[in-house]
Image 1 (cartoon, rainbow, N blue to C red):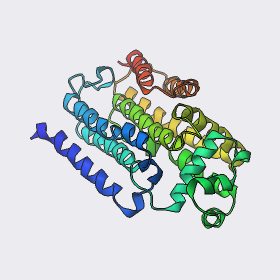
Image 2 (image 1 turned 90 degrees about the horizontal axis):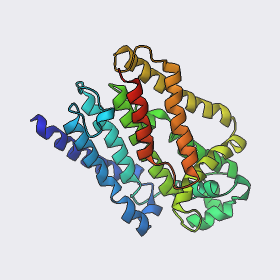
Image 3 (image 1 turned 90 degrees about the vertical axis):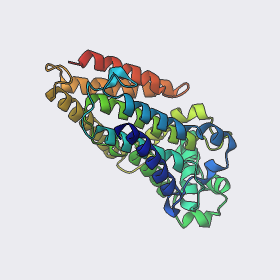
Length: 303
């Protein structure tokens, strides 16, 4: 029976994700469904997660698919945590392929790409009306001013997307499991942002979308009211999550008893932020490199 549980849960995840994606409220990504190049590339993304979660579930406890990050022995219920993280990522991936029905979502997606590719001052409502196919009046029905539209874009694609609870989940049995979920969450989030940021190749190439996303952070500081305080909340919440997970790992004996949790937290965070920024100038963050860096730090801390 235990042998068939991962297969059953993976099938269950697929059905839930497809059911959710077919609901009226979830169909928000029409532009992607019209992009053949995108569908060809990202149609495969939906499948990698099934293989990954099955491999992790079956092998976890005997070294796992990633021995350096696997706990010595899987604790009861941890597979369900991994399963639901996988489910959230799968739903997000499927949603990116669904036809969009609401003008509001079309406006936000095209505005995101424009704000990622050029400065706030250069973006005009006329550009957005042309991209979406709406009149200015149609856009005003949703967003009376350009700043209102910018605020909505930042709320959705920056503050909500970077919220640790939305990105990684908050329940982790071990530091090893948290690191796996963290890398998976980063991959899932950035694939979505890059896909949306490069809807129109003539506006922004896919490899430039990562740099465009950092550009969006900078613009938020200038044009989003009280952005610095909100960004601080996001960064602090992620810092506290890392601190909590590392503190728990030290208490449970997973990492060395003399580990400085403050410094270890800063080290993991700065490796992620530093790699993300440096690689944004080229092809974007390579999550395999990020995972290797995390593995090495983990091997130094492991008890």
